[in-house]
Image 1 (cartoon, rainbow over the protein chains, first blue to last red):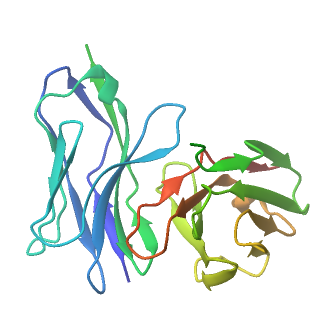
Image 2 (image 1 turned 90 degrees about the vertical axis):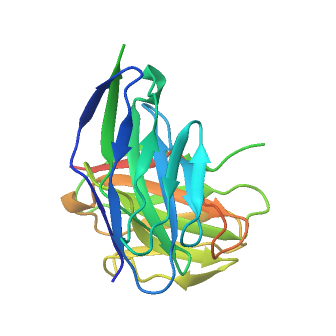
Length: 110
Length: 114
């Protein structure tokens, strides 16, 4: 079956720190990969995506590269801001169904 | 334009009761999805509609759960004989078509079964 594993949280960083959130997956077929974000009090929003191996998704300073050889899609940002505090979900899409990881809470302190 | 809307935003019901949760997708979106998110977990797929028909209902946990989309727009998730384990946030999403099109999520309905 399909599954997504995210690193354990929560994560607390100081503003301007470098961020890496690990994500690995298991899938049948050829998944598309996503990072979704849920800001406090808001719904799930798509942050970035990659549809095939070696694609890099990017948005709002965040990046993730689809690595088929390591079945990974790690999220990175060079300099986090307080406004990046949220819950981040890694997900894969196969046959129109999204499979999500458990999510990780990021807190950025000033 | 308007996003995906869900009503009610919160629903508290007693064990054994019947509940209906409503989803209004983005206008023109042919695909509609229901997911369930338990506390501390990521959303889990329940069912996917393409138009009026359920294209994939493999995520429905048991026959107490049922969903309809009679006119290919609004959808209703129906839960019979609710149990405390049904307590969760129920999320609806829609996309222009199925496949790899981006899914846009609604704010969810928080269901609490007492």
